[in-house]
Image (cartoon, rainbow, N blue to C red):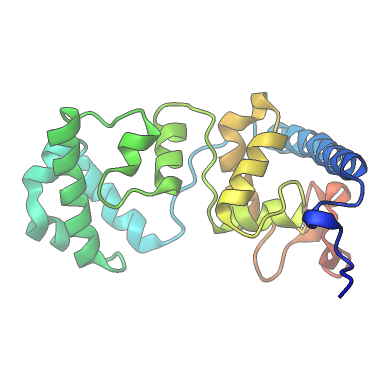
Length: 221
Ligand code: SF4
């Protein structure tokens, strides 16, 4: 039976297809530059976004005052830590994880948080997103953690369309100019949390409205 697909699954004209992809990435990169120029103008030094969960902020404020190193955290032990973080969801499991993590940092890295993705991701409870946050916030590296806000905003703005956080992360790293990478994660999170909200984006108050192809923006006031 004759197939409508080009031979071997390749595009009919690989050169044209490659050029289309390239130019669309170039177009997205140009738009990304304009977007980050604007976000930087509005908020030049974005601070690490606090958790929106009041229970998390309440628990961590007191906790970090008495246990600001892996050694002090490990010395606290699971039971006392559990008591201190009762306002956080899944606090029992989280207390166990934090103690295991603190012990692993002491045993494997002499109590110092490693500045290395592989070593970070090998620690208990640490995945790619957390490793990216640590590398960016603690060490100033140009990594980009994709959480729910970053994922949504990158897709709506269509600068890094993707079906998975990793796809979006890889594409963001390709299209965002180097000079904006250090703070890109914070700008996108803050924008997603307070303006480009999940259910009802505040397009009428958005500084990016003319750069955004997301359709529903025409409906919101
Ligand atoms: S215009 Fe609307 S959808 Fe687009 S980034 Fe702004 S808030 Fe989000």
